[in-house]
Length: 405
Image (tube, rainbow, N blue to C red; front, side):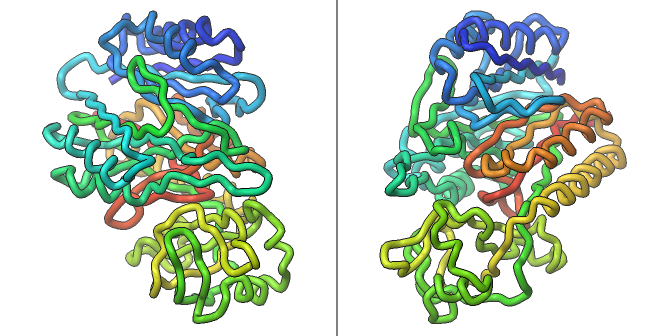
């Protein structure tokens, strides 16, 4: 398997699409690609970018991707202007195959959307990794109201309901910018909002996946959720959640923030991990406060009554430390397993744009290891935690595709 990556910062979308596809394919050392992952920010003309890439690739290449709030290359973090990136992958034999599916049901019923994706891919033999990309934004936000997001948990549940084996799932809920503007996805020749897409990579390939959280528990104290409806959380330990957070943090200043910038809620998603290992935490950002301060709005509707959670704090130093630690561990494991790394994908929370040190740490380690990198800033990140894949907030998910030596 061979991979090539290209980046562009031109406003001429059609020319950029041609350049990206041509350069990414050239980097593989081959004349064509089986797969092209294509990403760009909201300032790009999506259709023209896709048309340019498709003209170079021809009709046989699978093209997936879509919106990104920013692009991370091996040496740059591109947010301003109209950055775009492409990853081309080629397999010279039939040992590695790529299968894709899409669903337009995400806004109506995300569980059925996941089922539909899984049903279209359930006949694939020897699946190694499923990459999931979907539209994070159902309704764009404004100054008065927070954005309404598409829930990822039912999509994952629908996938697991139909896929024959528990293949690891990684990927992202795509985001066009930090203002939660409408999102677009690429699917072959199609550009569309409210879409979920899946790419199943199968055969002689092994993914190594790690998540780099940026939150740590504010204290060891745990709280039981006693009143919640979907993403609206009202009570912890039979007490209004807003009052609990005020008491624990010693301030009510957080109530004025949309979204809340320094706090989150989380639970340990892997009981086999050490209690203080933050890589096992599933965190949920607080999107805002309900009217009359009667509750909080979470980014995902997957918390439930009876669940034990902790109040988390966002810690820039912790982000960098976790990124350094987890990346080193992943590279060490790949070497011990005698696998050859081909390419790295990084799905990084858009809220972490303000902490570029963690992306630079990743760039340095992967450059030293001679592994090409394509990263995007996203809305929701997806990675295996414990025995299944989960959606994450305020995290970075690193995927390194390898082949056995």
